[in-house]
Length: 150
Image 1 (cartoon, rainbow, N blue to C red):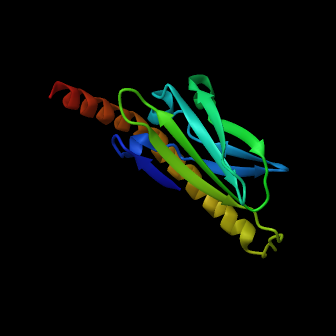
Image 2: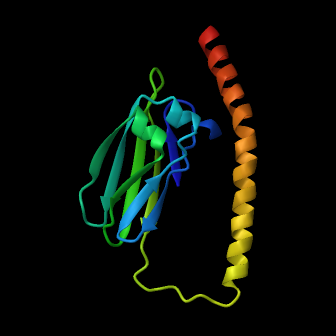
């Protein structure tokens, strides 16, 4: 995942943009509770499959707050970017990629234990981020107030 922001790069701006395979479709997901999504007026989701031209999908504020968009699943590599308009600041863009493996993965006997540990670690990180979000929001508000007072 790559984050590009012309306004103010910060953890508060991160969307957590990612792609999940669901049968014959892909879901492009982002953190709908993020400051970036909730403060944006609208956005453009760009999706490009291998060897294809980019599809531009306009998203209004309500779509941004849904946190998900399902698209047809082109085979191979898929690149997606989400650009958010955040007046009066500059637009911000976050991008991600997805590669579908053509060969099924063979599960080793120790994989299930490793997966369980990774899920537990991820759940702990999500909870930590959830607890930190009010602090990040407060600091972002203070920064904006300080910047606007100058």
